[in-house]
Length: 468
Image (tube, rainbow, N blue to C red; front, side, top):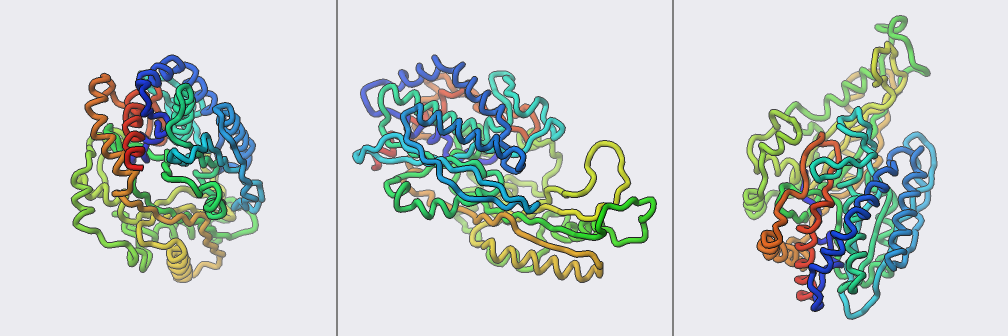
């Protein structure tokens, strides 16, 4: 797991109370409605809101509508902002799901906190390594498992349920929501929308909290940065149609062979990216950063047990974290157009598309990375002297993000976590919030262990308001 992006804030920046009413009233409300909350999560997970599959776009839209209706039920005002059309790699044009822009409360004497999240999910099949049906919530040892439980439907519902509880005594802050349905495929159109709304919807926002990454360990984590992503499609076209290897094997330049060759040139066995210039813009590592990584709580044995990997590319905690977060990496994700089902098939694919991505770090630029990748592959394909046709396209170009660790929300969160350690012990709530039971491809979220997160959130908002 990576760090859970201010999960303590998302679990309730809006629910913490500075009034004489004791926080236990809030926790009692949560406990009294626990079954209802879990059922709602179960209902949400059952919706296959896979944003990568055009045939399931109606389910993504349905998920957006359900989320909108729940926010309205909580007293929110909601705008469904349209984003236009998506041009799918297949050439199909389909409407993008709208983005939810919502607010609860508009008191000029209160700070305004905007929460970002998403209700779309990645594709999931049991044969991918799940121990259970991915769209059916399963309770195992007090933890709930299902696609979207921890990325990101669980976090969104945790926040909305906290708002519901806070409404019983009055929220101490104004709350806004930015919720989308295309995060898993690059947040198409979101950049433009945010820019358009900067002087309206975002004008009075004091703090923004993202609810969309897990913790590194069982200790509350605060994320201050994320690597960017350049996602590429590498297509090689050969014959007009698929051919049979019994009749044509050894007589044609096979598109699959060309693709495998090209993919194999991208990085070496140790993960070093072979593309010239790719490391040129990587920001130098400071001594302060190195010391920060040394101080992080992280257990290699736990990671090995979670992933099933016996040997990583790097042997120390510091190296492993640096290569997970601070250095660029290249990953190959799949091949479209080739036979991948069970059994045997002796087809020679006419056209295949390789899918790979490069994770960027400060100060890398997606447009520069795109040029470097295309130039490199063109040279390599020319060296192969194949008559087939190669096309390279970048379909996602997300920049890396780095925040100021000394910003008010980070200082507030750190103070809250420090204070919360004692409070959590007093409340006897030190049990793990997340457990690893299924493969690393699964989501797992434990709303039954919600009180520790709520206590931390109460302290976070207290510090935010004091700072404000």
